[in-house]
Amino acid sequence: MSEPLINKVAESGLITLDLEKFIPKGKTAVFDLKDYLFMEMILKEKDFREALKNTDWEKFSGKNIAVTCSVDAIIPVWAYMLVVTYLEPVANEIVMGTEEELQKVLFSKNISALNVEEFNDKRVVIKGCGETPIPDHAYMEVTKKLRPVVKSIMYGEPCSTVPIYKKKA
Image (cartoon, rainbow, N blue to C red; front, side, top):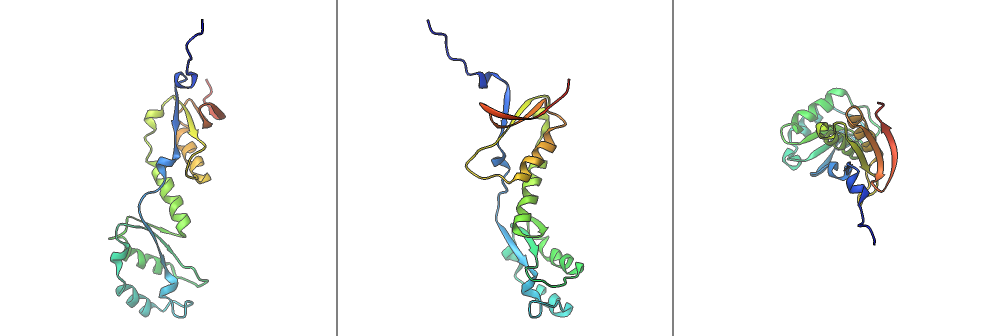
């Protein structure tokens, strides 16, 4: 007689964490100071302030914004501060840097909101393959977040994992 098939993965007590659920949602936009510079090189305070005053800030409403300057110009710190005073009332999130840096900050923010209590003393597999590429820094962030509370961390799929961390007894 044949014995019934046993799903050892299901019985192992492993929790699979898919980082795709932490991918930032929402629209993004870039606010480039280059467009507010004289000859795309020089910041003239009076002109800069006037240009900001006349900008339609509603186009940034509800978006995540990367504030950057895409040309090689000397931008005083107060200029970024001034831009934020206009963006803060309408934008979701504002980050100084490129759109890629914005995505990194948003991804990290989503991971930091993870409730680690549900992983307390559990064996966790961080899913390694998926439909959407996950940036490398996200794997580091989730490892930092989970390591203090989990029994073990593995990378990959439950049927084929790479051990990353195991709590010492």
